[in-house]
Image (tube, rainbow, N blue to C red; front, side, top):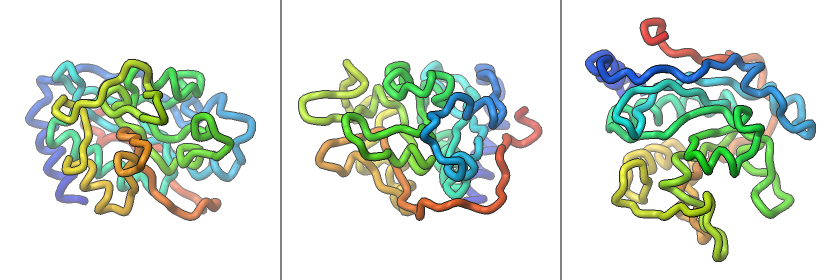
Length: 217
């Protein structure tokens, strides 16, 4: 992990001329403000906010933030380092609280996100996102197919396009190596979705905000 992140940081330093600016940086409290009243306190306590850098589809560097269970933060940091290193573009990485916790709205603008206390669409089952143990990446390039429907609406899956995941993609292979599941393997394809099957239990004390290195703030 350290070698991957170290290489990525060297690339960061070499490409500062491509800096595209920062999104509004949220505190942890801001990032979870307005979460569903059904969300248990211990689930919220398990979360941390993670600052990330990513390439945009505009060819420039952008900042973003994820909220996720603290146990999967190292995996996500490694995945984002890899995505940066290989030039994999992301439209935006903004906590779903900025979309009123509306997953469909977040998907419509092609936002990459993790924690959202919600149910699997059209079911009464809590999603892995409800525990901060899942991430959705570039929903417009990597849609969810269920029955005759596709989400986000109007999305088309074409594995040859930038920002699209497929079975041999380095990002997919890395997540699987780290023990994650990929929705692209499921009968109802959910190409954007990765989740980690960990025990759903309260954690001890942990860092609530994982910031970028000082020279990138």
